[in-house]
Image (tube, rainbow, N blue to C red; front, side):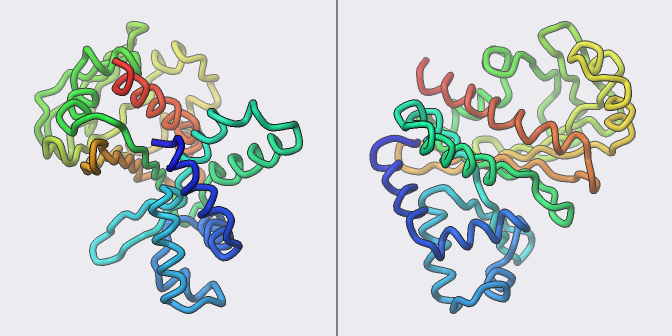
Amino acid sequence: MIGGVMDDEVFRALADPSRRQLLDTLNARNGQTLRELCAGLEMARQSVSKHLAVLESANLVTTVWRGREKLHYLNAEPINAIADRWITQYDRRRAQLFADLKTALEAEPPMSDNDFVYTTYIKTTPERLWAALTEPEFTEQYWHLHFETEWKPGAEMVWHHSDGVTTSGPEQMVVEYDPYTRLAYRWHHITPEFSKAFDIDDATHEKLAREPLSTATFELEPVDDKVKLTVIHSGFEPESTLRTMINDGWPAVLSDLKTLLETS
């Protein structure tokens, strides 16, 4: 999505000090309602709403509904894309500024709200993106794994990793399955075989093995000739080791997914 006009939107959004203050506020505590943001800032509710609309339009803020509450999350995807596209064209000082901003936007959220939320726009159709999220011929290409399941709520999921490791077990299942709109499933168990294959040390494995299964949710929304894909990974305990690990893993997976669909 980033490129040309979209770059301009991101730069314009970041140029305003009030909008940067809003991003700083979300960076300090992610997943806030409009009311909470207004309470922590010396800005009128209408002004905060307008600034949030600009940030959301630039994809720097993602919103997620929790019941009747609309939560706002800082989204690092535009900064990742700008860094990838432009950073080599800037001198060292400017490059460091981008690196600092990228680091800030990807910083680990506080433990009071530990969901991972990430939004990207992919030039494809909902049908093709859905296939890329569920069908082996796609997932093997960008994620190096495939799922064995009936793809219906409550169905068991077996994860087959390309290195031969298979993960299965209780509660590892499909949670939601609404084709072309919404998909959710429990994350896989971290087995000794998985940890060995991915060079996870014993101490880290012990921590991961004690954690409850989290849930990955994918929301698809058509926008012109693109699909807005929002990934919400939730259900982490405070100080979750897996939460720290997926903070870098998801952006890489989603970047490869986007590249696959837009270039093939």
